[in-house]
Length: 171
Image 1 (cartoon, rainbow, N blue to C red):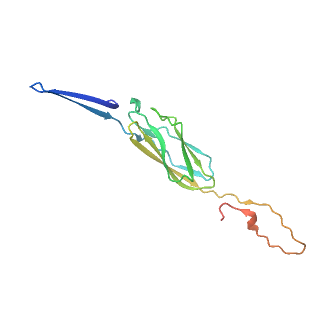
Image 2 (image 1 turned 120 degrees about the horizontal axis):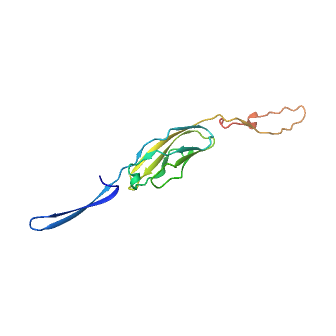
C-alpha cells in the first residue's frame, strides 16, 4: 500500500555486460472525497428566520488522517433571490466537524432553490452535495391606511376603499 501523497520508486537494472540503466517513477496516492451523509431537504414558511444546517459528516475522504485536506465552498444556488447560502467555520484541515451552512431567506418570497456544496481535496478532486430548499407561501395580513375626507353637508362622496387597504397577495 502506498502512503498518501507522492511516492517515488527508482529501479536500476544492470545487464551481463555491465550496462546500467536507472529509471525513477513517481506515484500519487489519493482517495477522492465522497458524499457520506447528505443534508436533509429544508422546508420553511415565507419570512422564516435564518436556518443553520450542520455539515459534519456531509463529506468523507479516507486519507484525511494522512494529511489530505478538504476545502468546502458553495458551488451553486439556483435561486439567490429566494435564499442566500453562507458557509460558517469552514475548516481547512483534517476535519469538517464544526462546519455549518446558514440559509437566509428573503422576505415576502417563496419558491424552491437548490444549493450545492462542494468539497475539494488537496489534489483538486471534488464531490458535491445538493440541498433542496422549499419556501412555502404565507398569506400575509392586509394592512389599512388612515385617511381623512372632507365634504359639505348633504353632498354625496364616492370613496374608493381599495385605496385604504393593502395586501401583499392582491395585485
